[in-house]
Image (cartoon, rainbow, N blue to C red; front, side, top):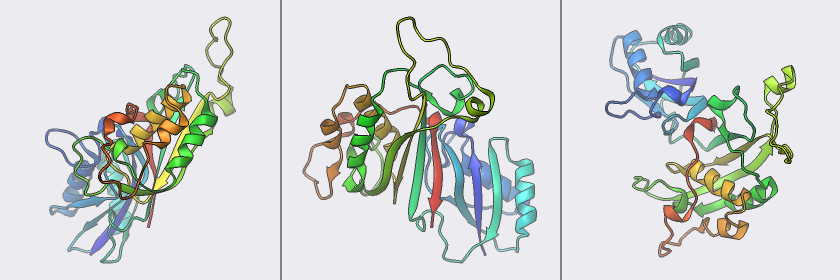
Length: 271
């Protein structure tokens, strides 16, 4: 019988989701825990890869078991033996044809940036103290919407059969962390003669039917270049290639640098 697992994980202690030799991964850790509890080898399939240090909330995976499973008790026992960086929200019986990866119709990622010195967000946010034109970044992000070839944002050497993705949502927005709104955290003193940035905390959200390896981090890095004035909106738009442009000699080196993985979350998977 097939079972569906919903979980979240802190990516700091793992080298991504997918099993790798000589490296701790979320998939391997979950498989070992399930195999121990069920008394037989268990293979787990996840909703998709996440890179090293990348986090996930509401991640979905599935596994098969010949023996009947008490799903409520299994979820409880998994949380008892899994490391603190992984939490299982629930285990449930699934249809025999349910597939955590190929059945997903929409995936959403969220990237967090803070523009001031703040020790309380450092673990899950990237500090970027440069002046940023968020309006320009949003204008550039509009060009991501639709069905395009995203090869300029794909990690070199990736084994994807196609670099075509359909993006349905892409935007920047401001937010205020709980420690600011609830406890009145004050930012560090600004440099004399300068003004504190208006948007102290911002996030980027993007949703698509599928994502390429390193795609979101490369997109964020390129959009930050737009915000810093190092790349124009038009130059960013030129990186988002039309479908069916096989002859175009665009490569990963045409886009900006990838931003750090610790501030990236796989934030939703839909079926």
